Amino acid sequence: TLLGSGSNPTVTYSNQSGKYTKIGRLVTINIYLSTSAYSGGSGNIRIGGLPFAAANENPESTGFIMGFRVNTAAEATPSINAGESFAQILARAATDTSTGWGNASVGIWTAANPTIAKVCITYET
Image 1 (spheres, rainbow, N blue to C red):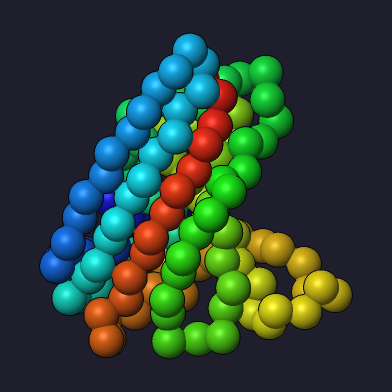
Image 2: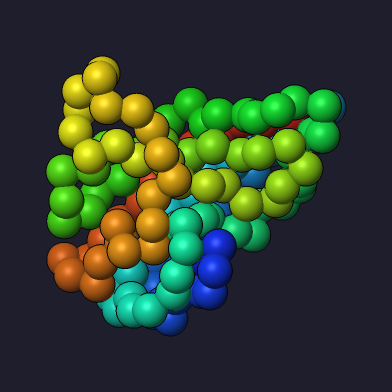
């Protein structure tokens, strides 16, 4: 589910699927989201509905792979903070190492084309 840290956007999904495997404390999730309509929301964009919260003793667990298509030049990666059960999407406007990563706003997602996210994240619970 796409969420906003302030308020959630209104979303119509063309496809919304996810699977996970948990071995011991390690969880790997695979998510595919495709939207046909998207509007509103505020704050930072997040992917909610993860099957388990991240372990509290790890300051951050970062995802390994994320494919993200938007109508901007943004590069994106997921990040899961300790104790959370959502993935924050981090973005940078250019694929330049001098540009740091920051929380992506809900506005990075658009209703056109449609927008698609393919996510694979491994984290500790």
